[in-house]
Length: 154
Image (cartoon, rainbow, N blue to C red; front, side, top):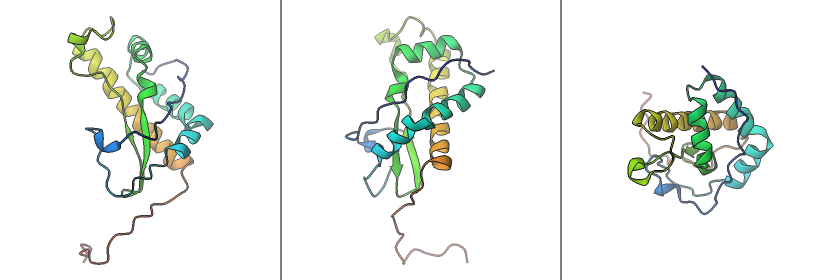
């Protein structure tokens, strides 16, 4: 299907955000999330490149995209370095379960629309991580596993 729209501005990452507060994220160990460097990469082209890759294949409709824009959801993404897992992690924004009670937006009128927006934003987050890891991040994890871990390869 695809979506033919310009990329929104890259999100501004918040260094003070605690990834442990996200329900969908689990990070252990080091808390140097390297957000400043990741944000620089996003503004240097990683965001637009990722967005364009995602937009080519997304099933999100333009009306739902415009709704996500209106709600500033794209700016609520968080990307961070997960040293323990040696990867870029992310938290994707979404429309909360109580969307009906809160009357968030006139275009949000069904669970189908909510699910479509939330799933599509999650997919975008993963594409951004993949692009960052493949083309921008050149550091490796500093975490070293203890020597007394069992060897499961034998």
